[in-house]
Amino acid sequence: MNTRFGEYGGQYVPEVLVPALMELESEYQRAKKDPAFLKELDGYNVNYGGRETPLYFARRLTERCGGAKIYLKREDLCHGGAHKFNNVMGQALLAKRMGKERLIAETGAGQHGTATAMAAAVLGMKAEIYMGEKDVARQRMNVFRMKLMGAKVHEVRSGSKLLKDAINEAFRDWAASVENTYYLLGTAAGPHPYPTMVRDFQSIIGREIRQQLIVAEGRTPDLLVACVGGGSNAIGTFHPFLDDRNVRMLGAEAAGEGLDTEHHSATLTVGEVGVLQGCKSYLLQDENGMIKEAHSVAPGLDYPGVGPEHSFLKDIKRAEYVGVTDKEALGSFVLLSQVEGIIPALESAHAVHAGMREAAKMSKDQIVVITISGRGDKDLETVFDMGVVQ
Image (cartoon, rainbow, N blue to C red):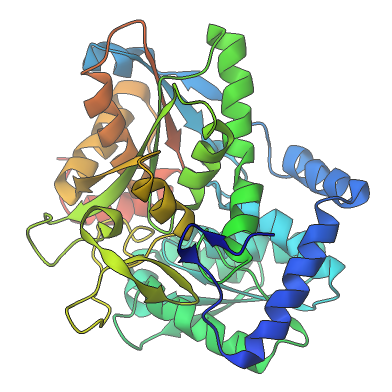
């Protein structure tokens, strides 16, 4: 298995974790070729996760934009309310296959933590979740869901008290408990083999889009759009189409309060190359190489790094990445709710804005597919408190 995407990726970790990563890579290589493992995963995907998720033609949103047809890939309808299930169920089954008794995970928006708690419950495993103090405060219902399903939630009060710090604490835990613990990383970042493994599990999104759109329209899309924090839903959407040169790919990053401010998470748009949490990729860092604090109204996007495959796709110009501000995302959150009756996660609302903006420039015989990575129930308190809807 290739450990890098061009110059990006790698294994920048303490020595104590190298054997664990080698064991993980070896076991994953065997599992993905094992018909019994794949059958079990498919069974959970279909009968527990509710796959396949619909590809919905958003007629009223299309009319509103006045350009290309807009389809929505409804990952918000996956069990747990987000795309996180796809990766979590695959890794949890792998952990059980490896004889691990305990799952640990990080979470920002709470969706990955919720999915990990869910998988641990159904497989009879222990789960402990690390979550930044600030994210705990704005995602109370997801914290409650994790605890309800039996997971222990560790509130991280170090650093910026956000996702980056939750990942740091999870790595510390794993380094001290590798023999019986599996670190279920939630995004397509971190040390090899996580970026490849997470991408593979999430690629079910893009594979379904291809099959569903061929049934609906008889062809592939002109443009795929997904939000990018660490980048798992986006790489899962994009990867099955990388060889289709006629399909454009657009990642929507969090521009926060603006790219001309210090309050954003637009790593690929304005970041620089560095090393963070086990891999080389684009990062938000200062002139001394110190990691900057990320910001987004969407807790799943306020991460100062990004998956290494996205960095590679940016460099070779196979995918484009744009910033969407908090204000723009909030506007699309409300618009999609009112025009289609679909309340997206604030993360997904970034993709909705970017997709609408592009669709309006395109012709009516073209097709845009926007991945709705999660549902917005978790964000209702945040939006309510901001007074966005009167």
